[in-house]
Picture 1: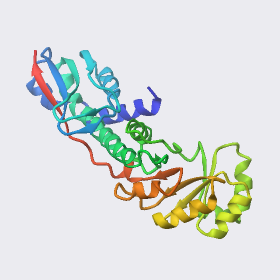
Picture 2: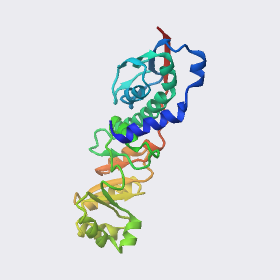
Picture 3: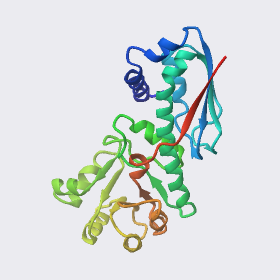
Picture 4: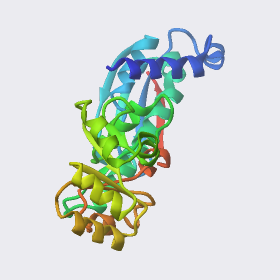
Length: 274
């Protein structure tokens, strides 16, 4: 498991349990065993299941964990997702952290799948963005991928995206592209006017970002580009209009809502004494 994910799990456990689960310690005998079942309470796309093993390993006291589904699976209400058997105290102290991760990440995956379904058959792919919960980006991007969309850059370090402020600070479209080309990284540039578009294409831009256009405007720009560069559309893209944008002929559409506005799904944890 990636160190960033392990760190997120450790921080979540420390935040919730602190020096100890005083309720379970007061009410539950040390040796009491139990079995827990994670249940979907609404239709959803799952994500985050592999975190359960990490969570329980860090607390100890678990004899068996069975994942009944995998990330990316669609499930209906009432579906069993996973079962765990071990010390009742361990299962109770890990309950909220486990559910928080599962519900949040499954929410991202579920919304991502809705976006992916909306553009099916268009040849356009949906991208996520860097609009993620601080400290949880890697997990939320994993969840978005589980939902069927394509991850964009992970951060500021793995790909170049030249936006309007970069262009202004660099002194223009051409000089920004020339300097970026020296990095050897993938380069995308935002263009806001027809003049910037022509300049970017003449300077050899291979990937263009068109922001805040209507679907009709976007279709006109895509026709003008004529396949000379890959095109990403962004800004104001929702579930209601994403297909209209996808049908413009663009290669990609990006939507920050997939990670910053996904509602958590409803998952419960049912405990039984054994």
